[in-house]
Length: 284
Image 1 (cartoon, rainbow, N blue to C red):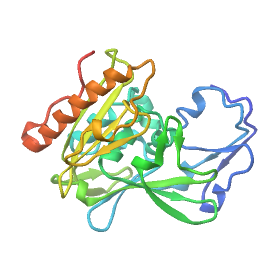
Image 2: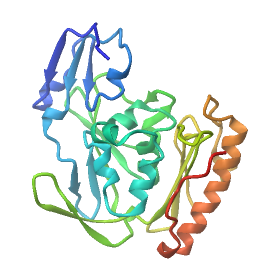
Image 3: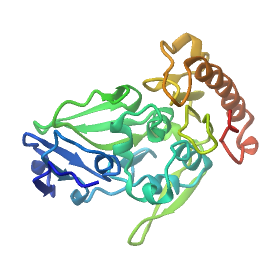
Image 4: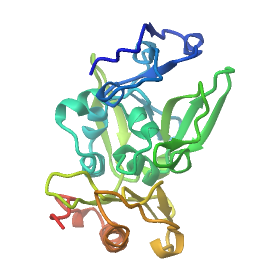
């Protein structure tokens, strides 16, 4: 969609270019920004020209995912968890090539697949401030509610850091654009998602990941904001509200999410050999 109110466009090539003028907003993939009218937006600042590397190894064995990394790059990582969690978000392969990980998280929709995946992985968002500072916050708390994050005006997410403790699987090589490879360990986990329609938006997304100390489970889609369960915690102990919209009633979401939590925990406990070939729940 044409944005008739936009009169300026800037490509950010260094951090100083990220200072927003009145009416400006950040642009990454643009799959939501250009999907509907934005009457308050008069200018856009393109983050993709900053040249952030999509995937980078971290000291100690972790993995950094740039905020501008296309979702398709995450989906293609070795290990079933990446692809199955990504498929919890209804989108075509064309959208996956353009939509970014950071955009999906910062949009703060309940059905944000990257939010659920990164919360289960215990990832931290690296946030750049307009004053030149930097702060870190777990993805699970960055998203505060429907269309609501902790980001202040002018803050931008630089990357998401996945700790090595959440990458308990075997090492694998990942081909990088332009040549070269990246060696990273894969997460061990399980995914379930359900929709009221065969090809509808997920009303429930549950992701479990084995960590160094146990199993971490995230619930998204079914709740206004991400919910993370550690060992011994049940949804009834932690969830304070179940989301209610056209994609599912609260009681349905609670019942399905509770069942899924038990299933993914059992699957992770059984080991990689018990991994399912599909994390999709049949139409409810």
